[in-house]
Length: 137
Image 1: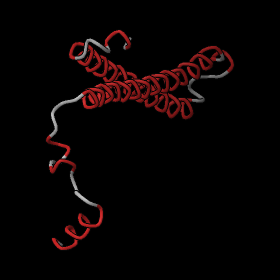
Image 2: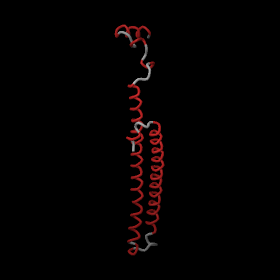
Image 3: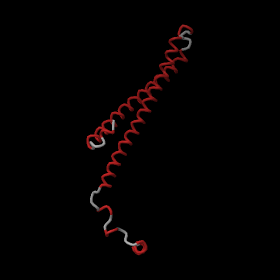
Image 4: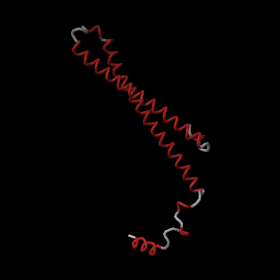
């Protein structure tokens, strides 16, 4: 294996310019720019996660509306049926509605908790890097 490395180095010239690997070079402008790019990438990732949380929140609200609309239709049309005669249909419908309300509540609560966490992380990044803080709302 060593012979192969030596052969590649002989063929292409020196492996490292000045005989030192690039990782030992002092901090330069390009590394500072790379650091800023990394910070911006972190903020972009957090904002993408926040958009995902907002989509989950929107889904939770939509799921929550379905049982409410079904129950409002049942209440509005209750004079056209006898509750005891359709009890075998209403019980599964109400249990399904309760399950949907629980699912919607879970989605909404989880999305709100995640968004608050992501907002805290973004605020920490703003405090650590004041140069990019004006660009982050």
